[in-house]
Image (cartoon, rainbow, N blue to C red; front, side, top):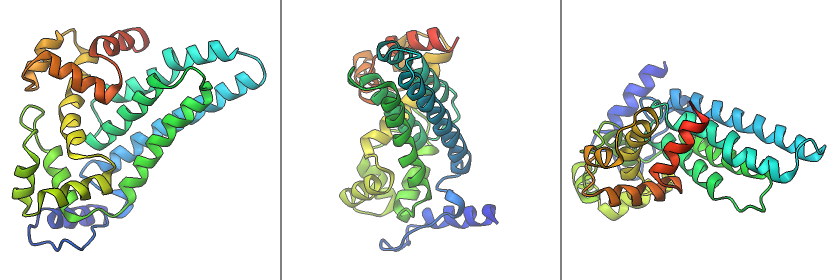
Length: 249
């Protein structure tokens, strides 16, 4: 039944005659071809962060660890290592990748005054909101655009917003608003996600120079790659690779 629903949904998403005012509901949270798989991965991540949050909260409450050492454990070990494992696994869709990257960015940029459990809870809340979006109805044009993003190669998946809008027979500005409303991310975020999802896997699994990775993914210059990377992850490619080597050997 799920396969039939998905087949019908994908057909509707790619039909340019679809009415703008209609919504597309994918049963069982299937928003993409791989979204059921993604929901399972994201729920696994939520469970990991929830266990971490409870463990740290109990440790601070009973004095088993000081707030300072718990904070160090959280930022330099626990939550970062959990998120890196999911980010570098290469199994996430672009939307799930963007959610994990957002949680990672919030963790590494959290104020030092934040308690460890609070930072873990914040990261978990980001992912929980994303899972909720996978269960909500999407406009057919948004579903079609996401399918286009997911099916594109990192180097060639950066067509202009206007080009995507023309292909889907919809106004560019309207498409942008719908995309942000339904997924929580704008066109630029999605375009970065397509490229950097591949980049983080190469950063994690290879010793390939960053200049080579940037060129392979279609960046005009390594500085552009570094800038885009910082916007998504809140840190540099060098720092992320260092963390990955230390925490996920």
